[in-house]
Amino acid sequence: MIELKNISKTFAGTQILHDINFTFETGKVNLIIGQSGSGKSVLTKCIVGLHEPDKGGSVLYDDRDFTAMKRRKRKAIRKEIGMLFQHSALFDSLTVEENVGFPLVMFTKMSEEEIADRVNFCLKRVELENKNNLFPSEISGGMQKRVAIARAIAMKPKYLFCDEPNSGLDPKTSIVIDNLIKDITYEYGMTTVVITHDMNSVIEIGDNIMFIFEGKKWWEGDNKSIIRTDNEEINNFVYASEFMKTLKDKLGG
Figure: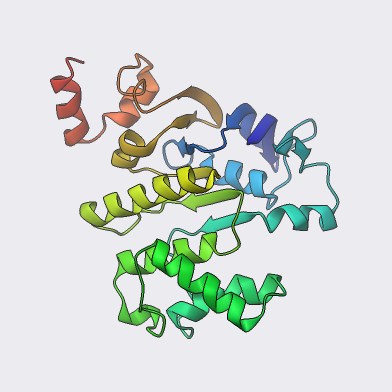
């Protein structure tokens, strides 16, 4: 569980985030959604410690006050965090196997045999067995994303952050990635936080959703309630596409 308490953020006299309170629940896929420029990225950076929230705000990881911690203690929590970046962020010069094993080499004292076993387990979990010796340039975008997921779970994280996981992917591959994120969240009981614009992801895997509008938490709920809310700003966001407008009509919106 990750709790946000009174998170505000100001840059050069301009307030970007306004007193945000929210709980990202364990064992669920938690989504942060909102228009470009709404403050999603700034909020996420506050959560992982890349930005410091304004005075009075705090981020708690399972009741541990991350905001109040010194650098050494924060480092311990960061080892419990897995990151899936928007463009996969694989190392081009490393093989699939080396990419997945990279955090294990850097941050653990595991033996080469133990690392190889863990890498193979993670690759099998994302259905990429026998791809160990390929380079990122030799596999598809969807496969790259799955390699990135395997790397993100290599250290058995308690918390998983996914930044626009379906960016650049076709609809069919996006569904595969969504299902994989959902499955590993439930399987490992992680607190998963997904930052997304993809309404299909919202509808399919949004267990717990926060909608940000102009730096404020404007709405919260799940994927069932979001399609029936009468909140004007979130309706303008959710039903911006023709597909979603059609869905709304079918639902009698």
